[in-house]
Length: 197
Picture 1: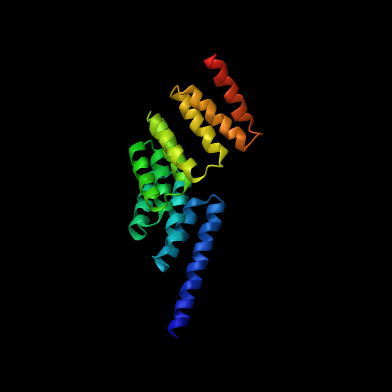
Picture 2: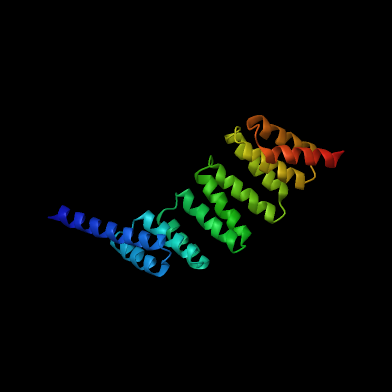
């Protein structure tokens, strides 16, 4: 009897959750949140529910509410790097760059080999004019994934902004070595070379 009750609750939870996601996909965010909150009340330990509610709030441009909900999710799941990264992205959207960087710091502490976290933190550092910090982040990402040509292209751009022209050319050359068909790396390398000359 106990197991039947648990199974029944699970089926109801799944049904509510799926309705919430269906309404999310239809961009009917108010209805989506209604069903997702009902689902969460059935299963308060559902990470998927927390993420979905925050995601729907973000889509509905309720950034502060989404940040609050990611904070509640982090209280429940403090070792989930993705939650910190999602909250960081929202802080970036509201131009609270210091909080965004701090959240990416937390995400990287938990999952230090995820290059997306380094790339995004590098972008934010660039926004606040910490160009060397952005270069350092991409250097770390490259140490994890040395065959990712886009990392070299992005770092080259930051080096170019920092007036490290020869070093930027070297990065574009490395990107071309990995991906010979990268028209962006070819064009930028030639452009920086002309600038130097």
